[in-house]
Amino acid sequence: MNTKRILIRLSQILIVLLGVSFITYALIYFSPGDPVRIMFASTGTIPTEEVLQETRIRLGLDKTFFIQYGTWLGNVLRGNFGTSFSFQKPVIDVLLQRMGPTIALAVMSLIIMLLFSIPLGVLSAVYKDKWEDNVIRGVTFLGITIPNFWLGLIFLYIFALRLGLFPVVSTTVSLKSLFLPALTLAVAMTAKYTRQVRTAVLEELSQDYVIGLRARGMSERDILLKHVLPNSALPLITLLGLSLGSLLGGTAVVEVIYSFPGLGNLAVQAVTAYDYPLIQGYVLWIALIYMVLNLIVDLSVEFIDPRIRRAA
Amino acid sequence: MNEAVLEKQSRFEWVKKHPLFVSMSVLAILILLIALFAPYITPYNPFETNVTQAYQPPSARHWFGTDKLGRDLLSRIIYGTRISVPSSLILVFLTFIIGSVLGIIAGYSGSYIDALIMRIADMMISFPGMVLAIAIAGILGASIVNAVLALTVIGWTKYARLARSLTLRIKNQDYIVAARLAGASHFAILKDHVFINTLPVLLVTATLDIGTMMLELAGLSFLGFGAQPPLPEWGLMLNEGREFMLAYPWLMVFPGLAISVVVIIFNLLGDSVRDIIDPRGNYD
Image (cartoon, rainbow over all chains, first blue to last red; front, side, top):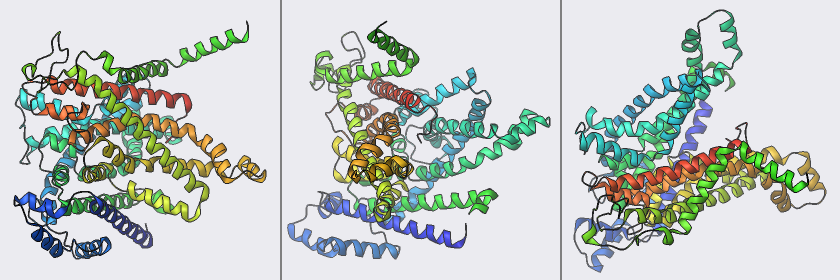
């Protein structure tokens, strides 16, 4: 990708961020709740009407929508996302504090997923329409269909409550507390990726070069490991980037089930507490991570694959 | 043989050729009937509380047991079809209609209308959907209607992109040009030619979407941003059963089973519809 196209992509990211922030701001502005009352409610005091009015003026909430949005945007550009109502801390601090656990969870679930989906997908492709393929496809269908919140509860019930192998509440981040949430997330992803690996490998196996290699007497094993697999990895990298992006947004359902201290749980808390600055900061932050990650993935795919580099 | 017999025979052949589609349609219709006739088949009133009967394990009197307020779980799960099924169908219908119409308009008109619609779609797509859905559902206030609205805001883009690319493929074909020369209005062309020709692929996508949407709605309710108590929504029931999981595991087993079974049926139905309408699989 040349500099000009990177610049275009970056400006697109900026436009999307502006749009997303505008939509969330508008939604919050026109929603029925009164942020000042909610703010006082979360501190436990009952304010008089005068105090309410004063706070509104102090926070600039008496201004028109566009002035408020403009002020907020100006602060964000200077790196100030405001103060969270419910945590009484700067939004950016709250977000950064939750980033670590969420990254750990995302990476671990991706590792579990890759460990299973690559061998299963290859097996499924090599034995296409044989019983191995049929069994794997049946299992992946189930994996996609079973809701992750149910699966999470079942894992929690069996492995944490009944067998006591894992903690029920994962407030600290350790391999042990990460395992069940990561496994729950990995099941649906494994099912999805097994199908993708199968399709990608089948696509490569039907190429002419495979026939050529077979004609030259190369073993099926070598064809698969040295030629087919590396070639089928490319389309998967883009997908992996997308998955990592959504995982980094926090996976609300799974994090809530395991009381995991990640971004997803934070988002649910923020919305439940009507913590507007936090919701606003969270949405913007996730959008930024997601899009920057996509850009990096696109760049690295071009870097790895000379064909795309030349086409660009 | 007269024609009626022939037709009957070919219909029978068709049924024999598509066993998956036929069996899944029968099951899907069965679910719809359960939803429709819920009051007549439930053994108890799903809203009636009876604290003396709280936390009864599954038995002959209460097949699925009772919950913390002594409500019959089987009756609540049967009533749950009345929430999950219609709301996911409405959600799929809304995303399908809004997305298709906008996509077709974008593809057919080109120029700035196209650019405007597709940039908005890009914006929604370059973003993890569930995050925005939680934010929207939470800000609007938790209810099943708002959950459907939130997921509609996220979901229409898929159909818009698909409809647009299909329209671009169709719009320069000779028969469209011919219709235009014959004096057909743009609206007539859109209605009689473009829409009809994009419909099969869009319908397949919509059928495949029903199960996914059902899961997302249940997920929002599970988090507390969808249906509210005392509604017997499956995701909400799972969340209510969560606290008492160790002592009363049936409270989380049966609602989860209900969601899974219904989603499996609709997913298999979607797969079979795709195989029939579009056997080469270029629906994506």
